[in-house]
Image (cartoon, rainbow, N blue to C red):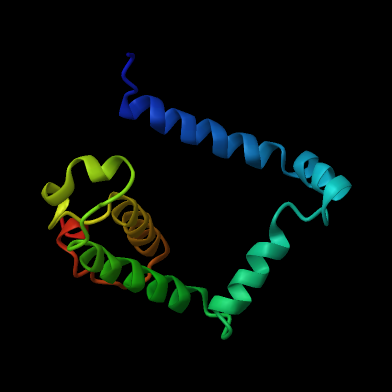
Length: 127
């Protein structure tokens, strides 16, 4: 089995992002044939209205980062009983869900990038 390197993953994300940006109009046109033609803007706008009724994006980013940060500790005591993770059973105790750690890490990086002051509490975000 061939291993995928971090560099390959980074490149794939860069290429995918560039592709989406380069094809925004084309994808919107396609979306117009089978949808509303806004390339997800109405979904994003609706979500923002739901999550950020004040229109303060920085406050919203801080709030969702805090929720994700706290969720890391909330998942720490879960023991998997189904799926691939169930194969490790009790050994998974005291280990947070990797998915929420990833999401919280991305949100924290966004906070740093956009100048939103947030101090994480989960050890995984303070490395």
